[in-house]
Amino acid sequence: MLTFAILLPFAGAALLASAPLSAGQSRLAAILVAALSLGALCVVWAGFIPGAGFQAVQEAPWIPPLGVAWRVGVDGISLPLALMSGLLFVAAIAWPMEREVNARAYYAWFLFLEGASLGLFLTLDLLIFYVFFDLSLVGMYFLIGRWGHGDAPRAALKFFLYTLAGSLLILLALIALVLSVDPLSFDMRDMIALQPVAGMDLRAGLILLGFVLGFAIKTPLFPLHTWLPPAHVDAPGPASAILAGVLLKMGTYGLVRIPMQMLRETFATYALALGVVALASILWGSIVAFAQDNIKRRIAYTSVNHMGYAVLGIAVAGSAVTGQEAARDLALNGAVIEMVAHGLITGALFLIAGSIWARTGTYEIDSYGGLAGRAPRLMGAMGLASFASLGLPGLAGFVAEVQIFVGAFAVWPWLAAIALLGLIVTAALFLGMLQRVFLGERPPALDGFADLTRTEFGVLAVLLGLVVLIGVWPAWLIDMIALGGG
Image (tube, rainbow, N blue to C red; front, side, top):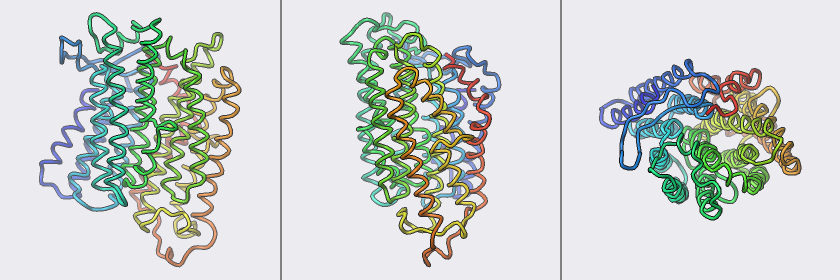
């Protein structure tokens, strides 16, 4: 089923690229393919046993002399991320195009990107992980460059070059890690069990540095985040939703799956340093977001802030503080839930921002005001997503952040205390945006502003409904993760 979920979107992309379909037919075909892929993941979920390690494993040799194989499987970390990604791709594909240009290629690239994204979360082979990591850059590059607006080609190029530089660092670190075992193996399960560079101070430190820098660019963490705002601002709304909701999680997932799990001893040595970088991202992302007068740029910087929370949880979980094992497990749970919650919440926010741009052609907050009367459904959706993003109790963001902070206070109380300031700034920036866009006097130019369509409202209802479900009843997601499963 996992192989089917990965390869079906690639097959669908090839079909759309070659078949003479209309825009409507292309959209329906892409929705069907993405939904079938999500359905296959749900079948795996139905048979999943929490806490039982890697499951639904499939393996076939690919390059036997190197120990490389097509290996796929899921555990409590990868399954929720794959399910969230599959759902977000269905939502992004179902969302109306902002510019009706070459629909077949547009939906084909979305399916291509879905196959690469699911492959990265589901593979158990390090080399194939790297292949899918790079393929995801290609799909997003074309979605931004061809269907974006503003200075989209430049933003797409900056995104590609930055993240490609990060992937090369990951490749160097990956090769050094694999060469430390005999016989050669790219099997993630072997690496987790063997801990191949434990006790090798300098070499292990350099390998860790390569992985951390590469994944920090992808996440992104301060100060390696500068590619993110222009990529978001100039990308179409659905592409921004996937960039924030799925591609950024490749960085945090990679941090957990490779350095934290395969380099435990070295990761623990530098965990506090990573926690300090996460703190800088939390504060910088929220403060800079507060200063933005562009809706999409403001939301983009909140991703730096929220990914900082996830990385803080990962740093706490990978630390070597004795006697706090339960707190470290709690922080890891919170980090994984933060990845899922951020994908749903920020994915919805970027879709909403795209719908606003499609109606007016601008993201400038000062161009709006008084939209509550003209677009009550839009205000309700954006208000719910904003409150979830600032961590209001009863919504998914709160469930994630409270676990991260409880774990962090037990391990590094001073770091957690300072990080709490980010929550205050985040609340101020979202409430200020809602006030300026929806309250006050409405400019005459917005008298014809249209509310969400049925399709837009339906997509957001599913995403935000899950945000509420996780906030009110988080046990099902916590049980799936089961302290990281495998």
